Length: 571
Ligand SMILES: C[S@@+](CC[C@H](N)C(=O)[O-])C[C@H]1O[C@@H](n2cnc3c(N)ncnc32)[C@H](O)[C@@H]1O
Image (cartoon, rainbow, N blue to C red; front, side, top):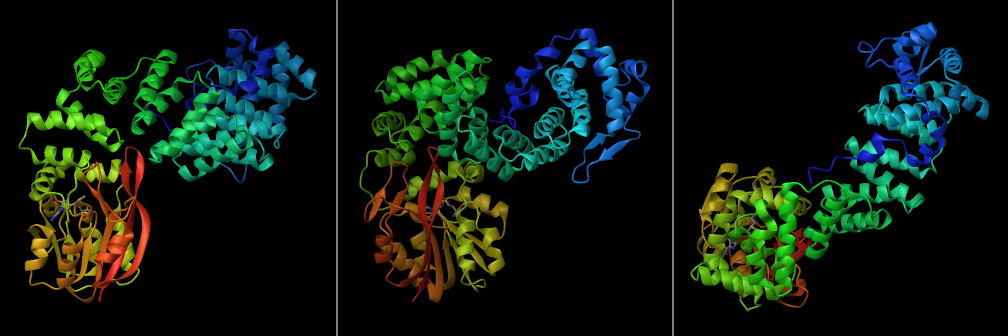
């Protein structure tokens, strides 16, 4: 999605169609005539073009040079020419361009004629000249909201974003009911990375004009960047419904559909994007090939899908092992368990001793287990360790350590002996260090421990199974912190007892769980366990539950996984 620029390119490159319908009169100007206008007010290309303007009217050159007679709007960084300068320009234009004169006569005022002239410059890509023409018009009609919006758009088109922002805010000050102006504000704010202002402005545009396809698309892209995928998908779908010939909208729909595991929809949207705009880029073609392959697998044609993959992907094809591995995890995460099981069996047949393949197949088949096998944990996390941080933090929006640390800090901020149970790569270290020392990290995976050592912050890192460590350590902790670790235990009784044993009275136990849809605990197709709060409480007889806060633990198949952050105190 790096391809998506902030803001909507369409809004920057040409005048809005609504306005465009009114520029027919001036659009008939000859190329030569237009060049005269350009030279008249162009500073950017001053050296490249002869200043014909001075031969038309020497005073009018002041408009371009900015030397004198300029009013600076106090609330903005925008300069409007003095009225006398504008009137000199108008006189010159009237004398040299009969069409311009006719429009002045038609409207009985030069401002509309200047505006239409500005639109012609804009349409022809002469943004600086267009801006100066709109500025001239505004010097005569400083309270015209449409002129301010036009000015904002051409500023934006020439990367003068701060000025664009000031101009569009001025437009909205005069008329806060224009959907088009809110859309312009949204695009400008989006380009400036002011996500909050952009989102508010997109939503305001939609409230004023629910059929504003560009606003739905802009909002969808913004939500996409924020990884609010379900909402982004709804917004982009709406924009496609309203404007089915916008290739960018189909392109975005393709990416979002893949995240939402709508494989057929993804391939359809990419094909439509390609038909409407340009050929797809290689990474997108790879995604399309994956989507078609996964869809065929869901339809019960696993073998056939794998055979056809090379042909579908062509020169963009990925390693088939990677496709099979990803198909297994994507299809199990999105609930297509039959297809996932078939792929899982295939993978296990290839490597019958692989504990990761065996356990994950068991999970997909819904076999009953009381904990993830230690061989699985070790192998899986050893392989995952180097990618863990970027995957969890960036892709899956995981932030349990910081959420839990805040929960703890709400009650107590100094501890004498802390344990990070299932410490992984040490994401919690930075959160826990302000609470005191020593901090011990325990984990089964040496790969994860190696990453934690690189990160630093631990007094000691121990490679051990969690319960085995708790049962044998002489330490007595006043904080035990288990972020995203209980998800590898189904039955919690033995773990809770061991934690209680290794704590001092009044010590705190902070943990996170994924919430089960039914009572007790469940092994999910992901290989992680989910627990009900009642079950957790029943297993926590040695503790008093101080707080249980709902929150999303991570994303899975583009959807948030709901969980609980829990803080309990040792009785
Ligand atoms: C999802 S990671 C979370 C890591 C870290 N707490 C964090 O928040 O980033 C789960 C970690 O728990 C460890 N783990 C799972 N079961 C374990 C067990 N029975 N004993 C020790 N460590 C275990 C895994 O090796 C892995 O590093």
